[in-house]
Length: 164
Image 1: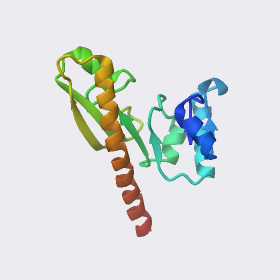
Image 2: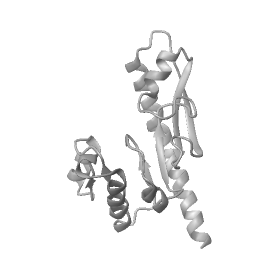
Image 3: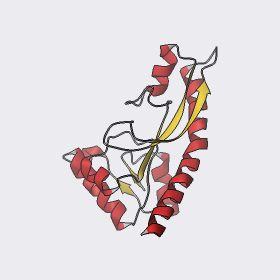
């Protein structure tokens, strides 16, 4: 596991379970490329086949994207292409007057939030919602579709490996 936020719950769980962990706060590196090369090397050293960006709030640099092309997925809190490009998608949807938003899992490419979509789930914006109640329902949708998308990618990777 790698994180840009060493204080996150996932990092604590990795430490507790003895899962290899790279703590890659941007402050520790002179550039985004340097950070992503360190993350790439850590993942390659540990034979990572699929990268799952969940709560990862940084844009990957070219060396990382090239090393894992077609094998990085991201969960985004909107129905892409709506409200792409930022960590405030739920707030944007809420304040826009939209009747629905949702969650998307997509393959990461060099173009931010524009890679092929694997799964989406719509979430209605209800009368009386607050940003927090909407955020909770969007996160519940993310929790449902992310494991499904991981299984889809595992199947794709297994198929592509068996063809070689």
